[in-house]
Figure 1 (cartoon, rainbow, N blue to C red):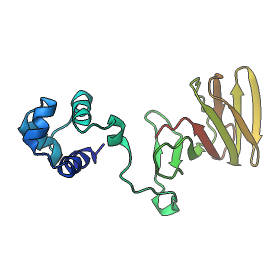
Figure 2: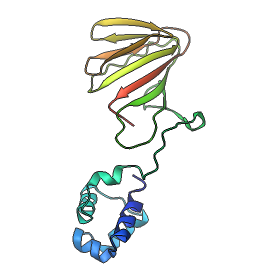
Figure 3: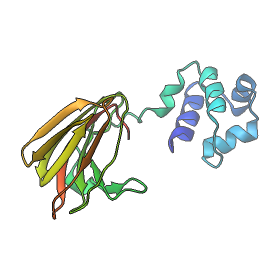
Figure 4: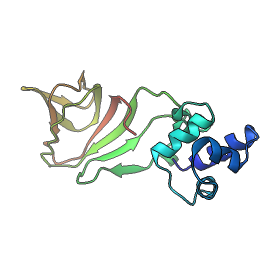
Length: 180
């Protein structure tokens, strides 16, 4: 989102339009468009749609990465994060390019904690236990997995997981659809 203002200005200059020209095509004021291009004003999706229509492009153009595809993810760039209200640590392992279909992550479950999350959502999930033990419950069936074991299932099935040991569990996770 932070590059949208740059993309708007770049498109406008490429099409040899003035701010007044763009204002005439969108119905948005020149001063507002100027603030948007400088990144000093937020932009509602409806305004962005007017701008994309004025440029005769699809609105999704603004959400694509700027032609700087990064396929490799070096360990030094991998930053752990936790979702709000969760002790589970995630590290994104995905390359950065448009139209990705998978979300690979390294997931660490805290030790000696019966961590349970119940989920049901579209997509698929694959987990490979790198370290420790994890108990997955898919619908009503339990699967006890240890290092080297894997599980792959449709995400629509109600599922939960827990780490029953006194050590952290580490999993390689690959999800669809892309969530980050």
